[in-house]
Length: 81
Image (cartoon, rainbow, N blue to C red; front, top):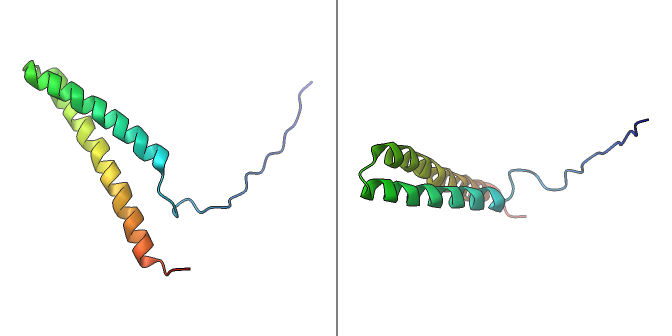
């Protein structure tokens, strides 16, 4: 015997109106770890560790910059309420 649950999530805040801090924090942690592993791979002259971790770290930091850029651009284009 199963139970039916009807759940309707309320959309009180538009998805694009705030900076997603959890996403930025996650990307910052992953980017920092990969940057540390890239540094270790560079010091050990191991390209198989250095190159992939460097690419992942650069992509993570790029996404952080892109998120902040879009947030600032959206706040400037939106009239003050």
